Amino acid sequence: MPRELLIAAGPGEWRAVWLEDGLAVELHVERGDTRPAGSIQLGRVVRLAAGLAAAFVDIGEERPGFLPIRHAAASGPRLPTELTEGARVVVRIRREAQSDKGALLTLRDDRDRLAERAARLDPPVQLDPMPGFAASLALRLPGLPERVLADDQAVLPELRAAFADAAVAHRAAADWPADLDALFEAALAPTLALPGGGSLHIEESRAAVLIDVDTGTPQAGTADRAALATNLEAAAAIARQLRLRQLGGGIVIDFAALDGRRARERVQRALADALRDDPAQPQVLGWSRLGHLEIVRPRRCRPLSAAMLVPQSLRKSAATLAFEALRLLYREARARPAANWRLVVAADIAAALHGPAASGLGALETRLGRGVLVAVAPGSDAPPFDIVPL
Image (cartoon, rainbow, N blue to C red; front, side, top):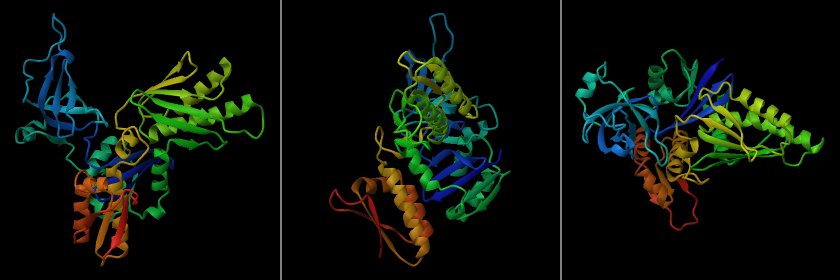
């Protein structure tokens, strides 16, 4: 199965799409703001929670990571005596941080090739792989790509180091086999149209992902046949959307007008078949008493919405809009390399440009060889940002 990786390398943010047999199946955003699952970190214990048999560990993120540790004892689980507040500890990330939760950690034996390096460093610091967008992205992928295409020649050396066995090349996004911008917009939308006229409505809540299947208005055939056809289309689309959007945890699906055991079994088989190639290995649990089909999909990476949207909202976050503004400004600057530029932005985006997107702004200014003036737009009805040549 041919595997390709397409990377749009903007200032401070890489957006990537993973293709299998020419079909986009995963989307990723890399900003260096979360440590990837599978990476090894040198952290420091900031708090012990004996009641949870766990420790909270500073690994350099906004929230400390959660390290569950259970040692058997006659009185029940207990923490190891060598684990104290302030202690240095080497951990591996099992599940990366999400919007309201720190990373899930596991202890890592530091008596290996990393021990010498860890002894010379002060926590928090990433031990393996070495920090870098390409190395972090490689850990998040389901496998090794055969070909990597990037829209920026400057990132090719880093990509070749991270993907040594792949064919790495520069190619303009207009010549890619997939429209990355359209894929990201569709994967952030709450509603997805199905080819036969129905639709999926996807809602991410704190407790579960809720998916509703709507048949629309069928033009021909009986209602039962139309519902079954829509549900079979929906089963394939749901399996794909779970990977594209990086959705995990409990997933509850309300299929449309499914009456009768035979119809339910057919839809359940179709969904199980569609999920078979998912590397996360989701499980189809069966039908609830309310008539919903339940799935559990292990979480490893944060959902795409957590990286790009305001929590519990459909609006793009200030950081996402800040990186979008930098990306579009970079495109304009490449077309007019002699111009100076001003970014006129909303107040929250200006704060992001001096906060989580500050490294992206600095990288852009380095590439341009000049500063970018950031001005706050007056009034609340102005567009999120405007790019103005000077």
